[in-house]
Image (cartoon, rainbow, N blue to C red):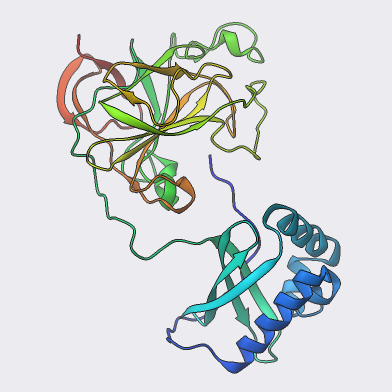
Length: 319
């Protein structure tokens, strides 16, 4: 469920400073003026040869037009830090704050440009859950991606999804029966997703249509989504839920085992499954993923205590 946010960044060497440089200040000021004027052609001509190859004029114009339509004009630019020869700025747009990283070559041409979500330095650190959890579903489900290494869990490579699970239902070595283009033919589709602990509902995204299996919705990554907050300030994200199935609202307190919604196929997903992750803050865009353990569950038919499921496990709540 990974989507790169914006643009190529070309980078060299490793060094760190704490103060902005005059040549960067001038280039960034020019960039701000040209962006706010909508003069994206002129921004393109600020690029060096490599950037122009990576971002041709038409692509550059489309990129900044899309950025402007989503975030609006730049109202403030504040130098933040230097990392790996590049300067990072906190940029306030009309609607949101972003970080923009600039790298200039020896001719003061832009050789790298990266727009990312602004991540505060004071976010809490979370390694794993201390709240006791049950699995958020009934019946036996299969861990398609899970664990703490990249071999078993591709999410590990992505900080905001680190240690996340993709879980579905398997029967006779398949996740569906019949036409693979029909959501209802997938065993996980429409199954109840329940609260793994007592928690507060702090985020709900609804109204996203389920995909035809095999197709992706890269504009609404998590699809229909719920985020729960535990008493210990742990945030549990449930993604790709079924259209019109969410049974809770933001601000609601839900008890362990209570119905959240149903498994679906909405968002950036190819087939019905549950994407489940633990994170250190509410906003997935700036979060760091953490390990999610379950208190007492059956794993491949055997009881396991305080267990972190891994790829290939068949898991079920102990009755």
